[in-house]
Length: 214
Image (cartoon, rainbow, N blue to C red; front, side, top):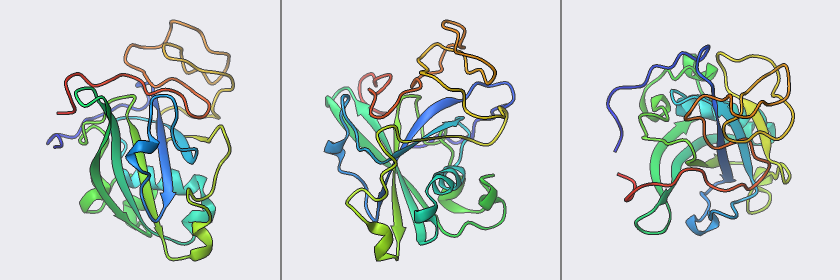
C-alpha cells in the first residue's frame, strides 16, 4: 500500500502545501464525521512537504497542543481520503509513533525505526487528503471532551520545519496563490500542484480520487 522509494524534496525551492491534521484523545474520529461540507472541529493546519514523516507530524502536532503533549504516550495515524467509487470518505492506517520521541526523531528528522520514518509520499498521500490522529494519553484530565482540546473555529495553523522561514502570512489564501512572507497573496502566481488552499475551519476537501484509492 506504500511506495518503496522515499521522495526527495528540496524544501528551500519547493512550495509547501497546507495539510489539515485532525486529532482526538484516545481514539480516531468516526469516518462519518468527515464530509465534503463539514469535518471535526479539532484540527491543526500545517504547511509541510511530501517528505514529512510521521515523526515530524507528531512533533508539529504536539508543539501546537502542549496540554496534550505532557501526557501523551503514543500518536496513531491514519490517512483520510475520498473514494470516488464508493462515493464516501475512507481511511488507510499508517502506523503508530511511540512517545517520547528520541534521537533525530525528536527533531522531526524521521530517524529511528518503524512507523515514525514513514513519510506522506510513501503513504501515497495526495494534496487534499487529510490526516487523522489518535493521541493516546494516560491522563484522564487531558481527555476532556469527546474531541479533546478545541482550538476554536479556525483551528491552529503552524509551519513545518525546512526551507521557508518567518511567520505565516496573514489573510485568506486560496489555491493558485503564492505563499509570500513579505506581502499579500498574488493570484495566479503559485506553482501548479499546490492544492488544499489556505482555509479557515472546515473547508471542502480538495481533489477527488479517480476510480477508488489504489
